[in-house]
Length: 241
Image (cartoon, helix red, strand yellow):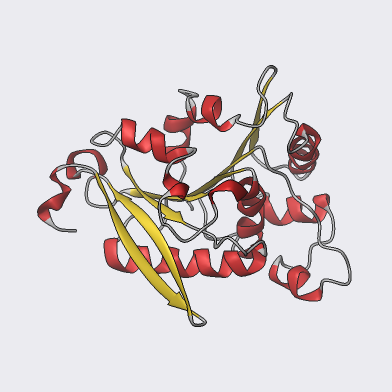
């Protein structure tokens, strides 16, 4: 990284894949906060932030938190953006991993401390990307999401997710990754049962999993989740063995 790391700041990048340009933003921490090998977080946005403006995905969820801690956050943060007409998490996952590879090649970071978080659609994507590359992430923080096991006829999706066909199969594949799952009990967009079901499966599999359910929160449980003071030291302490 260059001397521009005196202060934390965002940069914009593009990646072309299969003839489609994918735009994304990267937060680069100050040298004082991040050191020479900072942790790397990938944030996956919700369905309302899809598009190609390379802006909406940093306006909800983790982006405002990063802006409030520009010179203190000790991590590189990657903000890919899913196109408006895209809802295929498998294909988006492939693109997100290509973006993550590009960020690591350009900016470095600690490969043993790659962290994943997302909200709503991105909460679902967090589980799916972790299944696609379970050895990649040191910890995963899904918020107001869940996991939908692929139906038998969706062969490509089942293959991409390691052949899993149930919550318990997914949990067994993910049990080596620490999870902290958040959801609002009054969520009227994504049922809290979706998170409860996956958390219970992870517990049955013997995974290290924390679960925080906000009794009064609706869908935007990402605000109290990212405001949870204990989350950040826990997250940055995680490391792949």
